Amino acid sequence: RVWDVILAELQRQADADGRLDWSLHFVDSTVVRAHQHAAGAKGADPSAEALGRSRGGFSTKLHLRSERGGKPLVVVLTAGERHEQPVLSALLRAGAVKRPRRGRPRVRPEAVVGDKGYSSGAVRHYLRGRGIAAVIPAKADQSSGPAFDRAAYRERNVVERLINRLKQFRRLATRYEKRAANYQAMVTVAAILLWL
Image (cartoon, one colour):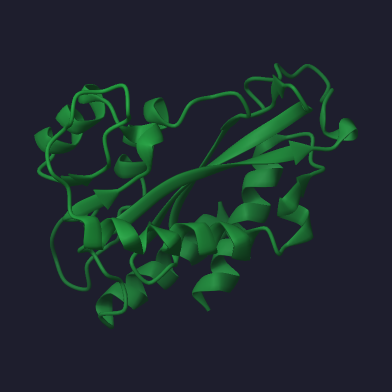
């Protein structure tokens, strides 16, 4: 967990300097293909190692939360076939940033921007209960949901660009590690490099 401590300290320093924007956070996910040798860790359950079967074989899904400046705050690993909605609460609970003075660490943004994969009544209810504004468009098969901030939604490319920057690291673009903890460490190292 040394890398997690370093990442948390970089985030704390950025928040103290006013470089961490809490007004708008973005959530999204991406699938990473796992190499054939990534499977089969001795005595491991594939789902516990964030490996899932899909049409293309084994894969892992990276769920990301980024701040408005395009820096990663939280990365959660799941099996490749998992949907985004069940992981949203884990993304919003993690990533607490300690304040420079006394007080609780900050964890809640003012608003969360997500694509239509996050559009459901349960997600909107969860965000409303935490006092977070939802900037999520309604799906075509849903009744028109509450109006959302289109200008804020146009900024969603921030998280897409973050995914592209993370996948520039070849170690992240294809998963070679058998253990999820080792792959998570590589993701954290990449996040540290993006914060520096």
